[in-house]
Image (cartoon, rainbow, N blue to C red; front, top):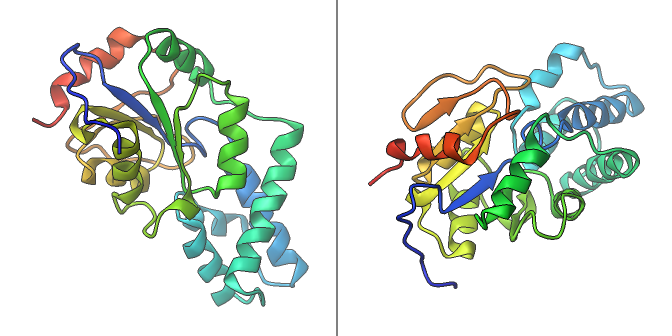
Length: 227
C-alpha cells in the first residue's frame, strides 16, 4: 500500500470521481439496457421503473430484475447489461459538461484522480482510458468491492490505493447513494445532481454543473473536510 500522504496545500489531495451521471452521461444507457432486457423476456416495464435503479450497485439491480421476472442468473444478467452499455459507449462517450475540462486542470496541477464507480470494470476501464493517460491513476469498479455504494468500501479502497487520507479527498457525485458512500468514508462531496434530487447534508456542497469550476473553487470546499 502506498504511504499515506499529508495535504497542507489547501487543495484536495485527491479527487475521486463517480462515473455514471457525474463524469459521463451514461445512466440513460443503463436504463435502456435494463428496459431492453425486460422487453426480451416480456417483463412489464414502465419509464417510471428506471428511477429505482439510479445509483444502485449492479448486483442489486440484477436481483431486482430477477424479482420482476427476468429469468437469468445474476452473473449472466449483469454480463448482458455491461456488454450492451460497453457496445453503446464505443460508438460515443457522452461526457458531462465541464468534466473533461476539470480533469485537465487537475492533471496540470498534479492532483491525482481516481474513478470510483458502481459500473463493472469493462465499462469503467474503457471510460478511464478514454479520458486520457493522465486522467485517472486508479479505478475502483463495482466488481472490485464486496459492498457497493452507499457502503464506504469503494471510496476507502480508492483513497488507500492512492496513499491519501480519506479526509483529504474530495469526491464528486450525482446521487444521494454515492454522496452517502463518500461521506461515510470520511470525505467531503461536491454534488452535481443529474437525474435525481440529492438532499443537502453535512460534508456536501452542491453545484448545478461542473462547467467553469476551478481549482480555487475546490479549495473553498476544503473547510468542510473532516479533521
